Image (cartoon, rainbow, N blue to C red; front, side, top):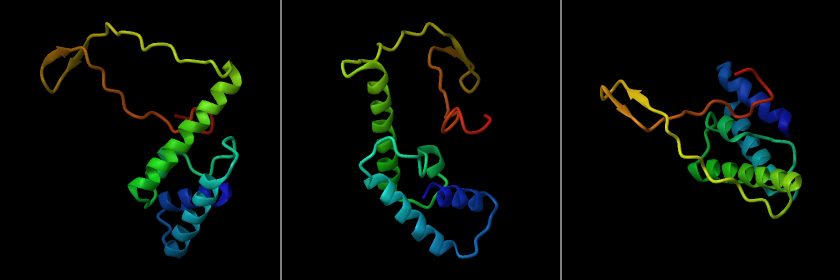
Length: 122
């Protein structure tokens, strides 16, 4: 369940390793039940960004990310209707100075900010 997934996440960052092998097995079982569920709006057992801290295979991480992308699609469709299509990406005229190259570039590289914007401060 989601409670165990949150416990495992906290234990990882608290460096609590006792019984970790069994906890990893239980984590994978919980994630599998979560991903195999029929409800795309089910409570999140694990977030894509959060899952990067887990000892999971790349295929498992990809499956978690795809699940959440599909979940977002369902939410948008519920709000905007089935004929929703995203707006085209705007063309940016932002100029960025690249300190590594000592030159101006038009590429802005953005890192991951947060797994979500509602459950914790950023």
